[in-house]
Length: 319
Image 1 (cartoon, rainbow, N blue to C red):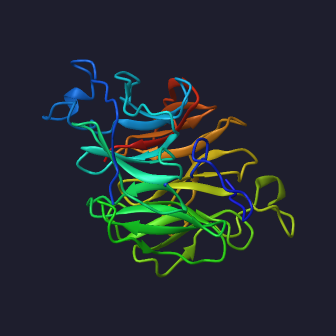
Image 2 (cartoon, one colour):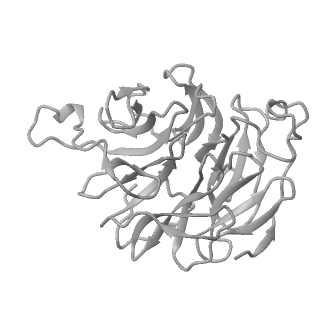
Image 3 (cartoon, helix red, strand yellow):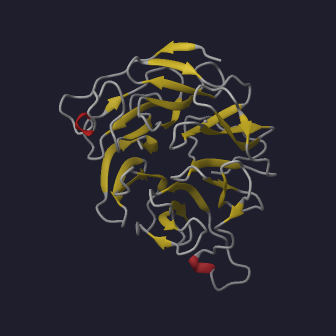
Protein backbone atom coordinates (compact mmCIF):
# COMPACT_ATOMS: atom_id res chain seq x y z
CA UNK A 1 0.00 0.00 0.00
CA UNK A 2 2.76 2.41 -0.84
CA UNK A 3 1.58 5.77 -2.19
CA UNK A 4 4.62 7.39 -3.77
CA UNK A 5 5.23 11.02 -4.57
CA UNK A 6 4.86 10.42 -8.30
CA UNK A 7 1.83 8.13 -8.51
CA UNK A 8 -1.70 9.30 -7.78
CA UNK A 9 -3.83 6.24 -6.97
CA UNK A 10 -7.41 5.86 -8.12
CA UNK A 11 -9.91 4.95 -5.40
CA UNK A 12 -11.25 2.01 -7.41
CA UNK A 13 -8.76 -0.51 -6.03
CA UNK A 14 -6.82 1.50 -3.44
CA UNK A 15 -6.48 -0.73 -0.38
CA UNK A 16 -6.43 1.14 2.83
CA UNK A 17 -5.55 0.55 4.41
CA UNK A 18 -11.36 9.07 1.29
CA UNK A 19 -20.75 22.58 0.27
CA UNK A 20 -23.24 20.18 -1.17
CA UNK A 21 -23.98 18.97 -4.65
CA UNK A 22 -26.93 16.60 -4.22
CA UNK A 23 -27.37 13.51 -6.39
CA UNK A 24 -29.85 10.64 -6.32
CA UNK A 25 -28.70 7.06 -5.72
CA UNK A 26 -30.62 3.79 -5.80
CA UNK A 27 -31.14 2.04 -2.46
CA UNK A 28 -32.40 -1.53 -2.72
CA UNK A 29 -34.56 -2.85 0.16
CA UNK A 30 -33.45 -5.76 2.34
CA UNK A 31 -35.44 -8.94 2.28
CA UNK A 32 -38.14 -8.99 4.91
CA UNK A 33 -37.18 -10.82 8.07
CA UNK A 34 -33.44 -10.73 7.36
CA UNK A 35 -30.95 -10.79 10.21
CA UNK A 36 -30.19 -7.12 9.61
CA UNK A 37 -33.86 -6.20 9.85
CA UNK A 38 -34.09 -7.97 13.19
CA UNK A 39 -31.03 -6.13 14.58
CA UNK A 40 -32.93 -2.91 15.40
CA UNK A 41 -36.35 -1.71 16.39
CA UNK A 42 -36.15 0.55 13.33
CA UNK A 43 -37.09 -0.38 9.78
CA UNK A 44 -34.13 -1.78 7.84
CA UNK A 45 -34.87 0.69 5.05
CA UNK A 46 -34.02 3.56 7.42
CA UNK A 47 -30.56 2.48 8.57
CA UNK A 48 -27.78 -0.06 8.43
CA UNK A 49 -28.24 -3.02 10.81
CA UNK A 50 -25.99 -3.41 13.82
CA UNK A 51 -22.79 -5.39 13.02
CA UNK A 52 -23.70 -5.31 9.32
CA UNK A 53 -20.73 -5.36 6.93
CA UNK A 54 -20.56 -2.53 4.39
CA UNK A 55 -18.10 -2.96 1.55
CA UNK A 56 -16.97 -1.94 -1.92
CA UNK A 57 -17.48 -4.39 -4.79
CA UNK A 58 -16.86 -4.75 -8.52
CA UNK A 59 -19.36 -7.61 -8.75
CA UNK A 60 -21.67 -5.79 -11.19
CA UNK A 61 -18.90 -4.41 -13.38
CA UNK A 62 -18.38 -1.13 -11.51
CA UNK A 63 -17.15 -0.28 -8.03
CA UNK A 64 -20.21 0.41 -5.84
CA UNK A 65 -21.07 0.05 -2.16
CA UNK A 66 -23.00 -2.94 -0.77
CA UNK A 67 -23.95 -4.30 2.63
CA UNK A 68 -24.35 -7.87 3.87
CA UNK A 69 -25.25 -9.49 7.18
CA UNK A 70 -22.46 -11.17 9.16
CA UNK A 71 -23.80 -14.59 8.12
CA UNK A 72 -23.71 -13.68 4.41
CA UNK A 73 -27.46 -13.15 4.01
CA UNK A 74 -29.30 -9.96 3.07
CA UNK A 75 -26.96 -8.66 0.36
CA UNK A 76 -27.98 -5.09 -0.44
CA UNK A 77 -26.68 -2.67 -3.06
CA UNK A 78 -26.37 0.85 -1.62
CA UNK A 79 -24.93 2.89 -4.51
CA UNK A 80 -25.36 2.62 -8.27
CA UNK A 81 -23.32 5.20 -10.14
CA UNK A 82 -21.03 4.93 -13.20
CA UNK A 83 -18.16 6.42 -11.19
CA UNK A 84 -16.10 4.48 -8.67
CA UNK A 85 -17.65 4.44 -5.17
CA UNK A 86 -15.15 3.22 -2.59
CA UNK A 87 -14.02 2.99 1.04
CA UNK A 88 -17.38 3.09 2.92
CA UNK A 89 -17.87 4.07 6.57
CA UNK A 90 -20.92 3.94 8.85
CA UNK A 91 -21.83 6.54 11.53
CA UNK A 92 -22.87 5.35 14.99
CA UNK A 93 -26.58 5.96 14.34
CA UNK A 94 -26.26 3.81 11.16
CA UNK A 95 -28.54 6.18 9.23
CA UNK A 96 -26.03 6.82 6.44
CA UNK A 97 -22.75 5.82 4.90
CA UNK A 98 -19.82 8.03 3.96
CA UNK A 99 -17.68 6.98 1.02
CA UNK A 100 -15.17 8.25 -1.53
CA UNK A 101 -16.14 8.75 -5.17
CA UNK A 102 -14.95 10.40 -8.38
CA UNK A 103 -18.50 11.03 -9.59
CA UNK A 104 -17.74 14.78 -9.88
CA UNK A 105 -14.35 14.24 -11.56
CA UNK A 106 -12.11 14.09 -8.50
CA UNK A 107 -12.00 11.79 -5.48
CA UNK A 108 -14.17 13.47 -2.84
CA UNK A 109 -16.05 12.35 0.27
CA UNK A 110 -19.84 11.88 0.01
CA UNK A 111 -22.66 10.94 2.36
CA UNK A 112 -25.57 8.65 1.42
CA UNK A 113 -28.72 8.93 3.54
CA UNK A 114 -30.09 5.39 3.82
CA UNK A 115 -33.77 6.31 4.19
CA UNK A 116 -34.01 8.76 1.29
CA UNK A 117 -31.21 7.56 -0.99
CA UNK A 118 -29.94 11.15 -1.31
CA UNK A 119 -26.18 11.55 -1.81
CA UNK A 120 -24.51 14.74 -0.57
CA UNK A 121 -21.00 15.82 -1.45
CA UNK A 122 -19.05 16.70 1.72
CA UNK A 123 -15.62 17.79 0.44
CA UNK A 124 -15.05 20.26 -2.38
CA UNK A 125 -11.35 20.30 -3.14
CA UNK A 126 -9.05 19.66 -6.09
CA UNK A 127 -6.98 17.23 -4.01
CA UNK A 128 -7.52 13.48 -3.64
CA UNK A 129 -9.78 12.78 -0.61
CA UNK A 130 -10.25 9.17 0.51
CA UNK A 131 -11.01 6.72 3.35
CA UNK A 132 -13.61 8.49 5.53
CA UNK A 133 -14.10 7.13 9.07
CA UNK A 134 -16.67 8.34 11.61
CA UNK A 135 -15.79 8.93 15.24
CA UNK A 136 -17.77 6.73 17.64
CA UNK A 137 -19.66 9.75 18.98
CA UNK A 138 -20.57 10.80 15.43
CA UNK A 139 -19.11 14.29 15.79
CA UNK A 140 -16.33 14.06 13.19
CA UNK A 141 -15.20 12.31 10.02
CA UNK A 142 -11.53 11.43 9.72
CA UNK A 143 -10.16 11.15 6.18
CA UNK A 144 -6.94 11.24 4.18
CA UNK A 145 -6.05 13.96 1.67
CA UNK A 146 -3.28 13.90 -0.89
CA UNK A 147 -1.31 17.13 -1.32
CA UNK A 148 1.75 17.32 -3.54
CA UNK A 149 1.76 13.55 -3.97
CA UNK A 150 1.67 12.79 -0.23
CA UNK A 151 -1.20 11.83 2.08
CA UNK A 152 -2.01 13.48 5.41
CA UNK A 153 -4.85 12.87 7.84
CA UNK A 154 -7.60 15.48 8.10
CA UNK A 155 -10.80 15.77 10.10
CA UNK A 156 -14.12 17.51 9.42
CA UNK A 157 -17.62 17.82 10.81
CA UNK A 158 -20.20 15.26 9.57
CA UNK A 159 -21.67 17.89 7.21
CA UNK A 160 -18.28 18.61 5.60
CA UNK A 161 -17.60 21.88 7.41
CA UNK A 162 -14.70 22.63 9.74
CA UNK A 163 -11.91 20.85 7.85
CA UNK A 164 -8.67 20.64 9.83
CA UNK A 165 -5.34 18.99 9.05
CA UNK A 166 -4.01 16.64 11.74
CA UNK A 167 -0.70 15.30 10.41
CA UNK A 168 2.24 16.91 8.61
CA UNK A 169 4.86 14.15 8.68
CA UNK A 170 7.31 14.06 5.74
CA UNK A 171 5.78 11.00 4.02
CA UNK A 172 2.35 9.30 3.96
CA UNK A 173 -0.19 8.94 6.75
CA UNK A 174 -3.14 6.79 5.64
CA UNK A 175 -5.89 4.49 6.91
CA UNK A 176 -6.69 6.41 10.09
CA UNK A 177 -9.21 4.92 12.56
CA UNK A 178 -10.55 6.15 15.90
CA UNK A 179 -10.11 4.30 19.19
CA UNK A 180 -13.35 3.23 20.92
CA UNK A 181 -13.35 6.33 23.16
CA UNK A 182 -12.29 8.61 20.25
CA UNK A 183 -9.28 9.85 22.21
CA UNK A 184 -6.69 8.33 19.87
CA UNK A 185 -6.19 7.53 16.20
CA UNK A 186 -4.26 4.59 14.78
CA UNK A 187 -2.93 4.85 11.24
CA UNK A 188 -0.23 3.48 8.98
CA UNK A 189 2.62 5.34 7.38
CA UNK A 190 5.94 4.85 5.67
CA UNK A 191 7.87 7.62 7.38
CA UNK A 192 11.46 6.45 7.76
CA UNK A 193 11.17 4.06 4.83
CA UNK A 194 9.12 1.20 6.31
CA UNK A 195 5.39 0.70 6.64
CA UNK A 196 4.51 0.79 10.33
CA UNK A 197 1.50 1.51 12.53
CA UNK A 198 1.39 4.68 14.55
CA UNK A 199 -0.93 5.95 17.25
CA UNK A 200 -1.57 9.60 18.10
CA UNK A 201 -3.95 11.69 20.16
CA UNK A 202 -7.13 12.67 18.33
CA UNK A 203 -5.83 16.23 17.87
CA UNK A 204 -2.77 14.97 15.97
CA UNK A 205 -0.30 15.29 18.84
CA UNK A 206 1.92 12.68 20.54
CA UNK A 207 2.55 10.47 17.51
CA UNK A 208 4.19 7.16 18.41
CA UNK A 209 5.42 4.37 16.10
CA UNK A 210 4.21 1.23 17.89
CA UNK A 211 5.54 -1.40 15.44
CA UNK A 212 9.01 -0.03 14.72
CA UNK A 213 11.74 -2.62 14.29
CA UNK A 214 9.66 -5.74 13.69
CA UNK A 215 11.60 -8.28 11.59
CA UNK A 216 10.31 -11.02 9.34
CA UNK A 217 10.75 -14.37 11.03
CA UNK A 218 13.20 -15.60 8.40
CA UNK A 219 15.59 -12.71 9.13
CA UNK A 220 14.92 -12.11 12.83
CA UNK A 221 18.42 -13.28 13.80
CA UNK A 222 20.16 -11.17 11.17
CA UNK A 223 21.60 -7.72 11.66
CA UNK A 224 20.17 -5.83 9.98
CA UNK A 225 17.04 -7.89 9.51
CA UNK A 226 14.36 -7.47 6.85
CA UNK A 227 11.68 -5.30 8.43
CA UNK A 228 8.12 -6.56 8.23
CA UNK A 229 5.30 -4.42 6.86
CA UNK A 230 2.67 -3.44 9.45
CA UNK A 231 -0.58 -2.41 7.79
CA UNK A 232 -4.27 -1.54 8.01
CA UNK A 233 -5.06 -1.06 11.72
CA UNK A 234 -8.53 -1.27 13.24
CA UNK A 235 -9.61 -1.14 16.90
CA UNK A 236 -11.38 -3.74 18.99
CA UNK A 237 -14.12 -2.55 21.38
CA UNK A 238 -11.78 -3.13 24.34
CA UNK A 239 -9.06 -0.87 22.90
CA UNK A 240 -6.66 -3.30 21.22
CA UNK A 241 -5.55 -3.01 17.60
CA UNK A 242 -6.09 -5.65 14.91
CA UNK A 243 -3.78 -5.24 11.92
CA UNK A 244 -2.08 -6.98 9.01
CA UNK A 245 1.58 -7.95 9.28
CA UNK A 246 4.12 -9.71 7.04
CA UNK A 247 6.21 -10.78 10.02
CA UNK A 248 5.82 -14.47 9.05
CA UNK A 249 6.66 -13.74 5.42
CA UNK A 250 2.98 -13.70 4.40
CA UNK A 251 0.10 -11.36 5.19
CA UNK A 252 -1.64 -12.47 8.39
CA UNK A 253 -3.98 -10.86 10.92
CA UNK A 254 -2.47 -9.94 14.30
CA UNK A 255 -3.73 -8.17 17.42
CA UNK A 256 -1.75 -6.08 19.93
CA UNK A 257 -2.17 -3.60 22.72
CA UNK A 258 -2.47 0.08 21.81
CA UNK A 259 1.19 0.61 22.75
CA UNK A 260 2.36 -2.22 20.47
CA UNK A 261 2.96 -4.74 23.25
CA UNK A 262 1.70 -8.31 23.52
CA UNK A 263 1.32 -8.87 19.76
CA UNK A 264 -0.52 -12.11 19.02
CA UNK A 265 -1.00 -13.78 15.65
CA UNK A 266 -4.68 -14.44 14.82
CA UNK A 267 -4.56 -16.24 11.45
CA UNK A 268 -2.40 -19.02 10.03
CA UNK A 269 -3.27 -18.96 6.35
CA UNK A 270 0.23 -19.74 5.02
CA UNK A 271 0.32 -17.46 2.02
CA UNK A 272 -3.32 -16.43 1.47
CA UNK A 273 -3.87 -12.80 0.57
CA UNK A 274 -5.27 -11.10 3.71
CA UNK A 275 -6.18 -7.41 3.84
CA UNK A 276 -8.26 -4.70 5.48
CA UNK A 277 -9.68 -6.04 8.77
CA UNK A 278 -12.73 -4.50 10.45
CA UNK A 279 -13.99 -5.58 13.89
CA UNK A 280 -17.69 -5.96 14.67
CA UNK A 281 -19.32 -3.69 17.24
CA UNK A 282 -19.71 -6.61 19.65
CA UNK A 283 -16.07 -7.59 19.17
CA UNK A 284 -16.95 -11.18 18.29
CA UNK A 285 -15.97 -11.30 14.62
CA UNK A 286 -13.47 -9.73 12.24
CA UNK A 287 -14.41 -8.99 8.63
CA UNK A 288 -11.58 -8.82 6.11
CA UNK A 289 -10.57 -9.43 2.52
CA UNK A 290 -9.47 -13.02 1.96
CA UNK A 291 -8.15 -13.98 -1.46
CA UNK A 292 -10.19 -11.16 -3.01
CA UNK A 293 -13.41 -12.21 -1.28
CA UNK A 294 -15.20 -10.89 1.78
CA UNK A 295 -14.78 -13.15 4.81
CA UNK A 296 -15.23 -13.18 8.58
CA UNK A 297 -13.75 -15.17 11.43
CA UNK A 298 -14.02 -15.18 15.19
CA UNK A 299 -11.73 -12.87 17.11
CA UNK A 300 -9.63 -15.89 18.16
CA UNK A 301 -8.98 -16.80 14.52
CA UNK A 302 -11.38 -19.74 14.29
CA UNK A 303 -14.58 -20.11 12.28
CA UNK A 304 -13.51 -18.76 8.89
CA UNK A 305 -16.57 -17.94 6.81
CA UNK A 306 -16.23 -16.74 3.19
CA UNK A 307 -19.31 -14.61 2.54
CA UNK A 308 -19.04 -13.39 -1.03
CA UNK A 309 -17.45 -13.93 -4.40
CA UNK A 310 -14.29 -12.18 -5.55
CA UNK A 311 -13.91 -8.48 -6.36
CA UNK A 312 -15.06 -7.35 -2.89
CA UNK A 313 -12.97 -4.84 -0.95
CA UNK A 314 -12.69 -2.43 1.98
CA UNK A 315 -15.11 -3.87 4.55
CA UNK A 316 -16.42 -1.65 7.33
CA UNK A 317 -18.70 -2.81 10.14
CA UNK A 318 -21.51 -0.75 11.64
CA UNK A 319 -20.90 0.36 15.24
